Length: 373
Image (cartoon, rainbow, N blue to C red; front, side, top):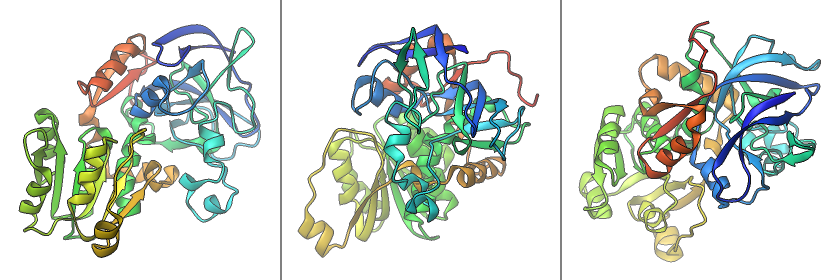
């Protein structure tokens, strides 16, 4: 079937909304999903500009929310009419998946970042030529086909327009804290960058019972929102010595945990310097940049640790419902970071994301959708 999709024709090109893209046929364990909305993530931008290797032309988008239209004959968990949030695809069969770590799926790159479906077939074509996909999802479309394992069922009384970013940005930031770092009540955490991922990490730090949740950025408006969402302290690093400020806030000790969401070399290095002895920093940005680490003083003598985290070490079918429960309880107000845009305004939405004007742009793909119906 032909669908409307936002296509990036070549590296660093703008999005072009086209109505002649051919969608793959429904497979045995596939869902055909009518897209309601999709968040825009910095990972989309990294692929658009070529910071990560991928084929072009490509249909991006991996924070989708929509309504199931059809299911394949082997689908057991979904039926037409179900409301779903889409996330990454994991095979479910390798050692990591079977041990409950789908973000470490041995086939993760092939399944999500190869530009084709997990079986190697084309997700989309245009005039007989393959158009690459992302995350076996490509949510910048009016309709898409995904594997059953891509989807998470959500209650129909929730507003689908808000939920798509739970599939990546919000689950990545919160999962890094809740699943990977696992701070105990009374410990401390600093988060570098107050975008969607960073704010999610801060809210998770508060949920975990951290007595110091320090938000660090260069934009005062974002730091004000960080305070509203649970940061105990904020630092504008543009005009402050961050390492000294964190030490002052922690009695000279440093923080137990840090999260870097920026991917900026100096900021990543500062996230190590602010740690207390034995502390851990998590680097989770998609970035081509590198860091200089003092392996003797930092990693050995001070027993500091640096961990990389993919997608918050999450199991979407477990973590996304948990985040929704936190949201209902008033503990995870992720929607305060969002701003809605028309699908046709995708390039403006992406520009606003890139500049920092909007924390989490959300494309409304079906403007006839009414929450709760």
